[in-house]
Image (cartoon, rainbow, N blue to C red; front, top):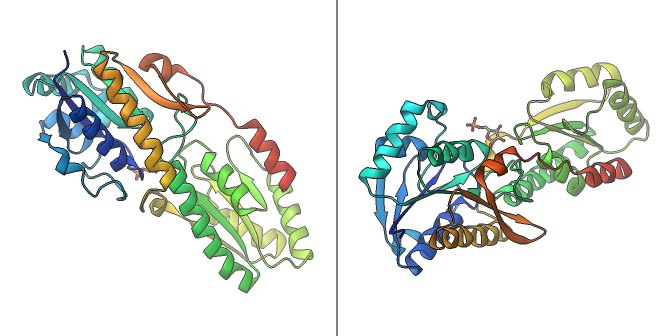
Length: 319
Ligand code: F6P
């Protein structure tokens, strides 16, 4: 029977991770388990930075951005020798199950532990919304709201100056933040991996907007797609539209989580603990059609991510 459960966060932090930590600890205590946290993700697991916590640890954290148990990226966790060190710590602390909150990288770490006989459960936490086994990741809603808030502010100044704004948003290689924010912000153009736009088309559209004397134009671009500063320069040269590039960067990861993220985290986290209580291991939790679901971790990592064909069509209709 499972007695001790440890919780860690790994990869890029996401608003709502604290809500997930909170529910895991509270649900675990509710089911009579001893609850532990691991600081600094897999780094802390390897180094044995593992601590027992009580309910007090979870007070006043649901509304806080970031992760109170910190996070890290540990590429070395691909090395079986490093994984073996983590497994040794898990045995030394007599931890029966590990819950990892993060994105694909975190899931790969959990999978490596599972292959060494550790019982694991994954909870999707990343602003990128790039985890195939869930319709939505914890942090996506808040980051989207933050982007909208920023774009609203950029529009205030760009309209005053009649400028075009090229706004780069995060997502690693997933265009969801760009697609959803484009719809919410009525962007004139959207450029993502799944929605590429050629220079000729872009310049033509911006020339038209300039000729119509519209107060501004907003182009939302996914990160890692192109150099937005260079694109801004090219637009000015080709269209005469004064253009500024804005890279929103890590401010998209900060801030108090939205109510939607707090609730999503609470639903997913409680299910994660219940899987462990029912001795169902090596699974990841997610939300599909607004129902909490779970999948085998290996299967989840092999799933192709949904491309939002309908939303891409909607963008074409709107733009
Ligand atoms: O995965 C979340 C994310 O913010 C991505 O959107 C981005 O590509 C990456 O993390 C940046 O990571 P870091 O802050 O470690 O440079």
